[in-house]
Image 1: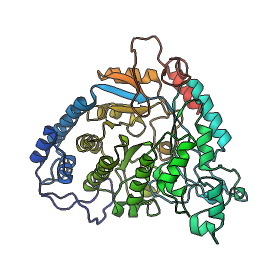
Image 2: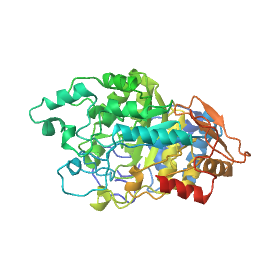
Image 3: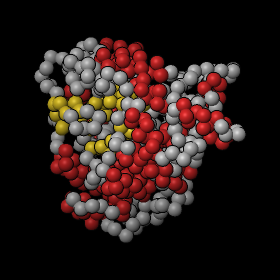
Image 4: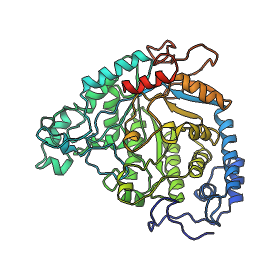
Amino acid sequence: MREPAGPTDGHSDFEFDVVPETDQSFENALANARAGDRLTVDDGIELITTGTERDGIDPVRKERVLEAADRRRAEIVGDDVTFVANLNNNVTTACNTGCLFCNFKDTAHQFEADSEGEHAGFTKTPAESRAIVEEALEMGIYEVTSVSGLHPAFALDDEHHEILASFDDPASAVDYKPPAVYETDPGTYVDQMRAMSVGGVHLHSMTPEEAQHARRGTEWSYEDVYRELRSAGLDSAPGTAAEILIEEVREVICPGKISTDEWVAALEGAVAAGLDVTSTMMYGHVENEAHRVEHLKVIRDLQDRTGGITEFVPLSFVHEHTPLYERGVVDGGATDAEDELLVAVARLFLDNVENVQSSWVKYGNAKGLKLLNCGANDFMGTILSEEITTRAGGSHGEFRSVADYVEMISAIGRRPVERSTDYRTRRPVDVDAPVHGPRLGPRADGTPMFGEATDEGTDAAHADD
């Protein structure tokens, strides 16, 4: 058993209570994984570290873990690689939470009508959101993902505005200022859901953090909030805002953000309201390997209780331009080996979550494809606009066409399959077709989203974003 470790290479040291120590052996943990047994946290720690009796990642042991995960992937979901034709429409960057890993936000007071400062942020009205979705529907998309900052003027509905305004000092008490204070009124959450839920599109929105914002100052339950949003057009909820679901890590990277218990309660409320949900982990900053496995345990336990999680999405921390990096708290992100082991152990540990995603936005094409042989089976979506990672310093682009997916997935000997957000509808893509475009969307007919699949087409996509 090795000495307690701090965060992995590239991260500053912290004295955490949760450390990667176990009384298990790597060989026993690997045997349990190969047998398909439900893994313990100690098993997971042994696998993700390639053994706690030694420092560093053992390359031979790592390959054995990756092989076990790839076999499990083939047994559970087969050799298809799925993707979705989607649009990101983030409503606002205004936020006062102050998370140190984020460069997406802009302090909300900069958006006030009398503010003299300049900023690069934005707020969209419901009408603007609707127009963006309508245009994307014509291109063939069928999912809209919307994740936004916590704008102080955002309320669930008109009743919520009245409740928030009734506080003696709403700005301090419940982070609320009326829409009239701001240059652009974002409308209510209900307004935005109605605006984006058009033409049969699947609306994937309202993170646990946003749901907490949409009930602040009230005694409404998360189920109440999600039921009202569902009636306004919400179809599923993203399990983002998770970061690492261990409080001692959250106290370092996002002390003002939703707690682990609240995150879990929010997703339980979403499932109770009849919505599918996803789950995520943002790793590679200050946390250690034990935190990562404990986070997986939180997700697995939640799935045991609800059965509503459709996928797990690992998100490798993009550190450039974030406060954690600029303040010297971290000097890099996860290594390639850490990325591979995180995906592999997620596949082996989350025995009740069928789909594990590889994100080309976070990993790039080459590594993203590699992770499809480490336990992942989904390759994200077309993402016609992606601001969050880009503003943090990500450099892997903002768009992938169906033709791109066909080329990349076929190159590793797997079958590209277009799928719905909930994975219940799937369409294998005819790789021999002369052109490739989405077909599952309400207005999709197989036409390429941006003309022929050429470099010029990809450049046009960026020019239109």
